[in-house]
Image (cartoon, rainbow, N blue to C red; front, top):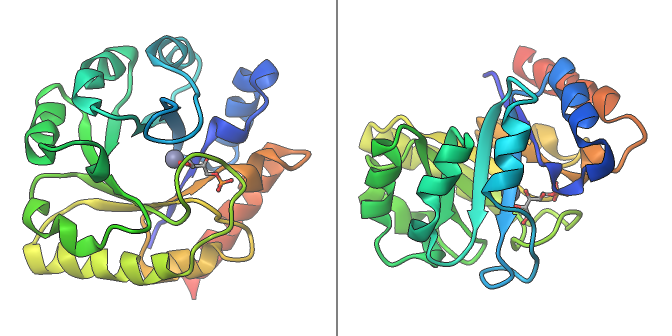
Length: 223
Ligand code: DX5
Ligand code: ZN
């Protein structure tokens, strides 16, 4: 079990963003998790492709782009051009998820699908061969710093069962409310990638905290 860390820069200090990305990169992060919000699908607004393209030049970490926007099919090409290697949209945000997953693959990105807390894993059953990445929300999307919803642990286990049953290869990412206290239970439930926002960037030294998460996860895999 090698659980990867995807720091969410939603909680980073944008006046020091390149420096902070460098700190998490040097201390065990594998991805940069980029939360794109449109103020419609979620009640918050962040950034678009220009910011991602600029950051793309400043780090070697893989860009994991989490689209919390309505009609994601209108924008995926632009996020791909900006340098997103993984593009995840919400099942709840589009009518034709299967077609969009195929399109994301066709433009050379990993195709990700995300489900909000109210959406059961069973809704992904007929798509299991069509995505490379599933993002299970463990908070209601929109803001950092919210409390982890424990039922997400059961959903991680269900996603693993779906993967086995369907002989699919997708990775399981979990996003929201992950802390030094609960990260091992998320890993033990079967997450491949953990998104961590405020628990890294709301600490005085984001590099040191990333290292603490890395050590906890490495310890968990040794036992
Ligand atoms: C929430 C975002 C998350 C957020 C996680 O809608 O999708 O990626 O940044 O932040 P924390 O880890 O603080 O819950
Ligand atoms: Zn996210």
